[in-house]
Image 1 (tube, helix red, strand yellow):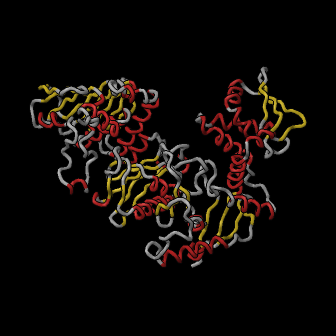
Image 2 (spheres, rainbow, N blue to C red; image 1 turned 90 degrees about the vertical axis):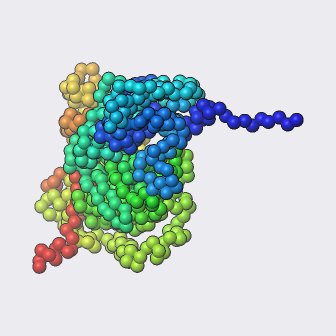
Image 3 (spheres, rainbow, N blue to C red; image 1 turned 135 degrees about the horizontal axis):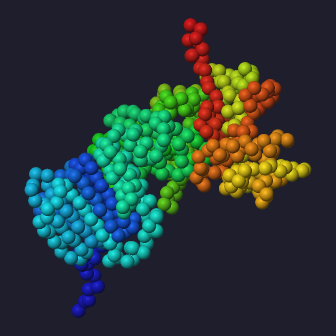
Length: 590
C-alpha cells in the first residue's frame, strides 16, 4: 500500500503564501488600497496610518462604492470587476486588475470594509479575519468606501519580524503616497501619520502638485517637458541642476497614470543631464507617458511596478530627446559640444539593481545590451536603427570634437573670448575658475586635503560665539578642504594650515569670507556639507572679475574649464560661458 506525502494545502494557508507576492510590507497595502480607490472613480482619497501601518491603515474614498454582492466577493482571490476576457488582459486601463489585493490583505490582517453605492440608501460593512469566513452586515455609512486594516502580519510572525523600523516603513509608505499624489494631480489626497497631518494636496495642475509634494520652493526650477511621436506621448517636468538630489528620491515615472520603475527610461533622462550634474547627483523629474495599452504589458511583476514595452527603443529615445530639448530651451544645455559626448561614448554602463549584473545601453538607439558589448559588435548599429542622416550627424560630431578651440582674447577685464566650430565662446573668468576650483577640491583624496599648506606662523582669528559654533559644526568639512584649525576656549581660532589654493596673507580673510557665506546659507543637509563648503570656498577663492590675465593664463583657464566634468555651470548653477553661434553672427551683419 503506497503512502502519499503530497497533499493540497488548506485555503487559508495557501492564501497566506500567495499573499507574500502582493503584500510585502505596510506600503504594499497602502498602494493596493489607494489604487482601488482611484479605480472606483474617487475624487478624494484619505489615508491614515498608525505605527507606520503595522497597527492600522485606514483608506477612505468617495468613489462608486460596492453592493452587498460585490462586497462579499471582493475578498475572494481572483474576483475582479476590471477584466473579464483575454482581450481585457492585453489592454489594461485600470491600476488594479488581478483581483488579488484585498484577498491577500485579508489573509494576513484583520480587515473591515464599510461601503455604500452612491445610488443606494443603505450601506454594508464586512468584517474579515484570517482563516475565518467574512461576515457582512447592513450599516449606515457614507457614500464610497472605507477599508480599515488592523494588525498586519499578526498571524504570520515570520513575516512580521522581517519588517524594518517604524521610521523605515513609514518612509516607504510616504514615498508611495507621494507617487499617488503625483500620478493624479486632479484628485485630492490627504495623508495622516496617526493624528499628525503629513500633507493635504487639493486638485491642481501637475506643476503645482510637484512643487507641493516635492517641496521645491520656486517654479523656475522646473522646465516643461512635452513630446509626441509614433503614438507615444510624454509630458511632465524636469528639475534644473540647482534642485538635483543625492539620491533618486525625486524621480517619478508614470505610464498611463500608473507609477512604474524603469532603469532604461531613468537612464534616458540621466543622459540628458550629462555634464550638467556633479558625480553623485541625480536629477529631479516627474514624467507622464501615454502609450496604447495594447503596446505595453503591465502584468510582468506582482507589484506591477515593472512594465514591458512593445518597442522599448522608441520609448527610450523619445524620453531622452524630450528632456534634452526641454533643457536646451531653458538654456541649461548650451549648443557648444552639446552632443559630442553622446557621439564619442554611445555605449554606457548602466549599473545593475538588486544584485543583477550591469548592462550596457546604446544611447543612440536606446537598446539595452548585455555587458561586454562594444561599439563594433553591436548588431543594431545598422540601417534599421541608424538612418543615413543620423550616421552623417554622428560623423559630423566626431569631426567637431577633433577641432580645437581657437586663440584667446581678454575682453572688459572679465571675459575670455575664444572660438569654436559653432561660433564665438565667451567665458566668464570668475565663474569658470569657480567651477575649476570646485572640481579640483572634490577630486582631492582625503589624505591630500588633510596635509593642507602648513603656515610658518599660526594665525589667530577672533570669532563670535555664533561663529565658533558654526566652525565646530563644519570642522570636518573645513578639514577636508585643507584647513587645520584649533578652536580655543577664549573665543579665538588658531589657523595652522590652509588649502594650497589660498594666497599667502589671505588666511584670515578667506576664513572670514567662508564663515560669512555659511551664515547666509540655509542649514546644509549632512550629506551635502562637503560639496556645499567646497562651493563656498571656490566662490571666494576664484579669480575676480577685473583681474588681468596673460595669454598663457587664459589658455590654461579655457583648457581646465573644458576638462571639468560639468564645464557649463558653477556649483550654484550659474553659466560659466555662452556661445554666440555663427548663424547669429551672420544674421547680425545681414
